[in-house]
Image (tube, rainbow, N blue to C red):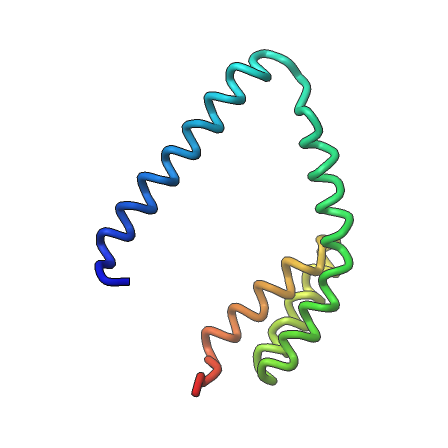
Length: 106
């Protein structure tokens, strides 16, 4: 990466272009319809498969470091108590304790 500012501007322009194309495509294809053209099926499949990723995320966090693993476990436990998917709690807990106790990269 030779020029960081140029890479940011390029990413911004490309992101806006792709987003605008998607908005235009949805406007002309879906328009006023209530149909999501399969997006509801894909979201349901993602939620169902995400339920099984929580334990894998906890195990992966425990292999990274002890504080990150504990944060992942506590976050998953809190989300389980709140009856939310434990995947989000595991990720947030690992991120919070990972920011307090960072892993040294050698």
